[in-house]
Amino acid sequence: MLQKGRPREFDTDQALDRALEIFWRKGYEGASLAELTEAMGINRPSLYAAFGNKEALFRRALDRYADGPAAYTRAALNAPTAREVAERLLSGAADALTDPCHPPGCLGVMGALTCGEAADSIREELCTRRASFERELSQRLERAKAEADLPADTDCADLARLVMTITQGMSVQAAGGATRNDLRKVADMALKAWPV
Amino acid sequence: MLQKGRPREFDTDQALDRALEIFWRKGYEGASLAELTEAMGINRPSLYAAFGNKEALFRRALDRYADGPAAYTRAALNAPTAREVAERLLSGAADALTDPCHPPGCLGVMGALTCGEAADSIREELCTRRASFERELSQRLERAKAEADLPADTDCADLARLVMTITQGMSVQAAGGATRNDLRKVADMALKAWPV
DNA sequence: CTATATGTGTACCGATTGGTACTGATATAG
DNA sequence: CTATATCAGTACCAATCGGTACACATATAG
Image (cartoon, rainbow over all chains, first blue to last red; front, side, top):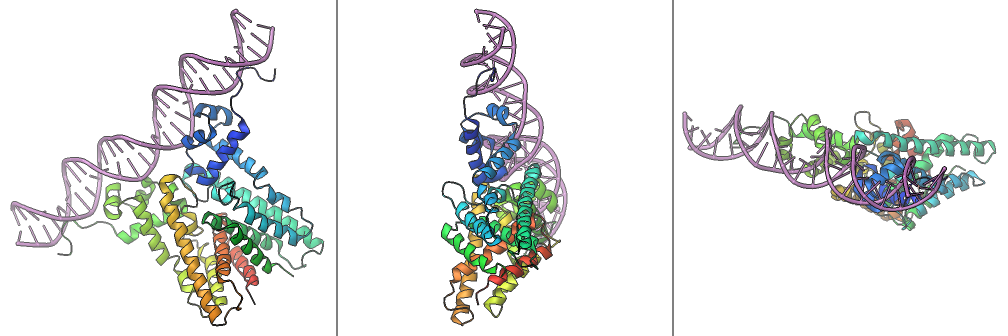
């Protein structure tokens, strides 16, 4: 009795990937339901039945983004040293944000930096997620400091903010057409500011 | 015969400042004509008579932004040394992007990172302006290199891109609530990557 | 004064926005 | 088979979008 009525004729994850692509390229506000349904290959009532509404669809797509194209960020935190965490975050960003298989930049930045009131809760959600990852990074650096992997006088919150600032700036650069090589050089140069 | 018909009852520059504030906070797409006209204290036909349409209004506001709140960027290029140019750009950004008198971040970034097709020409205009300033900065650094103010092997385009990446990242940080002090520390730390 | 030129305000335009009611199709449960 | 539950598709909703036609007000030019 796993399914009672008529089975769904489309694959939810695939439809979600299509929606993700649209949100990524156009932002939450710039992506219309007409575009979304067309790209997803379904019509409006199916979208609402499967995902709730536009906002819920975006959050689902955002989760899928975090677990897919942006999974490298969490993985980078597991690098053995703080320096390597930063290297993997920055070079990973250079690669991911210019991956030709996807729209440029990071969905967390491109999704809704500014918007009308209707999309405000989405904007706040993205802010919260960015801040949340920044804190995870900060805590990883704190661990490194405790392990004498970073100088004892390091302000880990400041250092985490620096790394986030650079990766977020890379999103804007990618949106402006910066190439993978351009961003790799940015990553390399920025690492010259790394403590000791 | 300087004016023939009924004189305008509002101040164009003041109305433009109000429009700028709205565009800055909500982005081009997120700012509706209803909000704009309300903030400007005029009604729709007056707006269209004075500025043309929404797109033209945004471009006027953008010019006003460049000559006003963002004027520090051009001014920074006149600093005597390359290092001071970077210092003034970065610390100027830390201050300007968190100025409590204005919405956070830079209009050139917040205005339209992503959007629907209708706003695409605005998005491209902002991309072009960002690239244009990056090139001006690059040329300023080239001059510094010629003056032996930068190492002879400096890639000025790369260095300019690094500075732009950091200031643009600061916009995202400001949008997320980073304080002036937060960004000043980012600026200070980033300058540790400065060559020689 | 009249003629002309411009601005203001109301009321509206077609198109598009996100969101749904409802009909008919298609599966399982019994 | 029938009953039931879910999905797909058409056709529609009110609200809002950017933009404008038109009547009226207010200035200068003569």
